[in-house]
Image 1 (cartoon, rainbow, N blue to C red):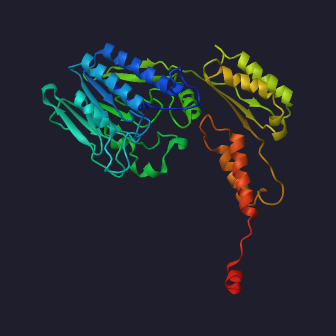
Image 2 (image 1 turned 120 degrees about the vertical axis):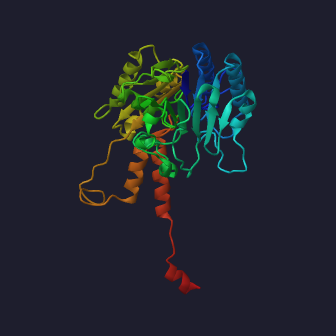
Image 3 (image 1 turned 180 degrees about the horizontal axis):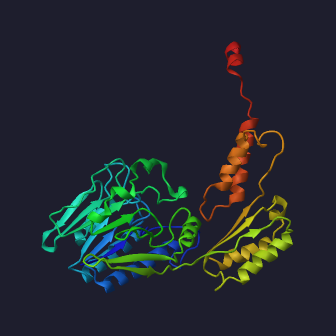
Length: 397
């Protein structure tokens, strides 16, 4: 008995401003195309079970085109695999925050798909000796993760965070209490554990995996790409697992849009002309070029006057060629030897805000320089407002 494990489809995901000739956001079209090819692959594998561990959609209320595309592809899947069991658990992106609002995934139940949302359910298939414990995103709901010993095969599908797996930039403070430890799963008691909620593939135990997202759809795609490089992982994948033999097969998922993180540049002591040349050289040496790709160029220690004098005509041309070109220029750190912020002294509020804005992860289309400048301007405006002391105000009354 074989299964296929998917998660984080994020249909309806939109990013950047480029549109297709039909007027659809290009990244939304990319993700839809990847899902179509994934369904093709699943059909070719002919698995007995298809596990989708959450976040079918990017938003709780997705657009009509995203819903129609999902319905068409799921219809195609169940028609091509009439004997296969398809289970979908709701992720946090699929789950409304109010109980009065129904989960959008219920639209797929009439197709014969087992949709589990709101609370955990155990699905039993006695004729196959199979039980599936499906645990959707449900804040505050902690259940015992126990298999049913009366069945030959037990599968756990869970959408949620796991301690020690989600990187610091991806941890949602509201869901920290819902994290579980790897040891709480009891992996040896299960035939397979399909986990969702982490964008990067991760093996927890030989039969326990986060299969990762289908495409680069997180709030920090560059952090996602960096995490993949750190664990020497190339791209996205789905998992095929044989419950009888324990054989694992990892199938690559080919993205429609390549992410290119150009080699970072150190701009200290560079003139604007030097930096223009270094950026151009990086682009010219990029294998396959930057056309129609998502590109980032990090430049560290860029003084403000150098950033102003860059060749903005050339930068506009890079942005025209790429689907998205992001020049992530980072100004030098200010090192003080006296006054607030000096060694041994507590940093000022202004310095703390500045440092936080410089270090926090940002969406690829947000200009870091502009964000920092705006934040500091707001701080200066707040400092300039005269506040009448409470004592003086009461005396004047």
